[in-house]
Amino acid sequence: MGRGRIRISYFDVVGKALPPLPDHEVGRAIAKLSATYRAGRSDFDFSSEVGRAAYAWHHLPAHMSDLTRLLGDLPELLEGRRSLSVLALGAGPGSEVLALLELISQRKAKGELELLERVEVTRVDHFSAWDQSFARLLSAAREAVGARRCGLGTEWELEAPAQSLRCDLSRAPLSEQVLAAAQGVNLILAMNLVSEVAPRGTEELPAGLAANWEALLQAAPEADALVLDRAGAPGVHERVLEMAERAHALGRGVLGPKTREATCDSVLTKRVKALYRHVKLPTTKHEDRPVKNLKTVWLLC
Ligand SMILES: C[S@@+](CC[C@H](N)C(=O)[O-])C[C@H]1O[C@@H](n2cnc3c(N)ncnc32)[C@H](O)[C@@H]1O
Image 1 (cartoon, rainbow, N blue to C red):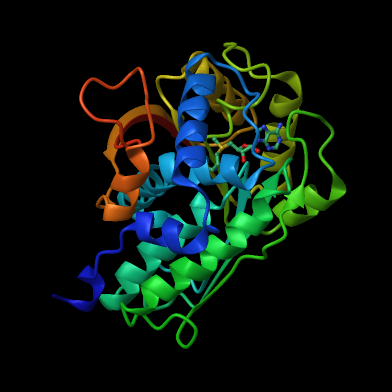
Image 2: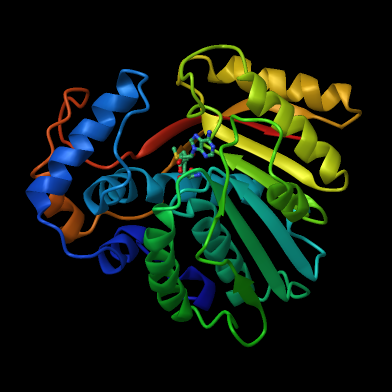
């Protein structure tokens, strides 16, 4: 097997990163998280270790795969750069950071992206409890990609501070700190944020988020901005379309919104199968398991 082909199951990474918790509690939390999302509510409690673990097992590997594949299809975002600086909005546990680490380590191990020496990601979220989970996930993921002998730490580096910028992106104006962080980045990413910003399920882009989106595009006129979200969530397509229209009105080139389907690339481990024996999801016909298939909508400005 070539060095770039070493496959990592991010369920292993999640299992190594998270503190040991009783399966029946995490299982119950996954069922509750899934029910909360289905009902279009946003009151799931991510302040507890168990709540964050539920998200990490149920969603994170699939979200990572979605972004890894999309970036693979948009090679111009990574090719030909010495450094890449990213502002990740609504980054939570850092699925974006792990996706970049996964994709770049695969390609570096194959001798690609030779120029790239430095990747920096700043996470923005209104909820700082994610920072602890993120630090552990990144450390476990770095260890896993080390097996690829991809030059991480010697030929290139990934810098992603554990501390996120704390900001409620639904309230304008944006903090000076976030605006300053946006200046000079190459890529602004909003993955699974647009569906989450309250009030959930409406077709209008919340006014504060709309103003902040424009402020970020103006603060970083050279940066690409990539939005990726659940196509099936109510109101999301309309919200992303409004982001496209606002970007266009600011003179930006716009690609999308477009829809695509992605499958989680991480194989199920014994650990995750044991955990899902404690999960009961009314939406699945055969077997309860982490999210495998995603239909997503994306936009590049
Ligand atoms: C579905 S999670 C997405 C996490 C990650 N980007 C991913 O795709 O796996 C949504 C994230 O957006 C954050 N979020 C929701 N509303 C927000 C707001 N108004 N301001 C900042 N962050 C927000 C949540 O805390 C959460 O981390």
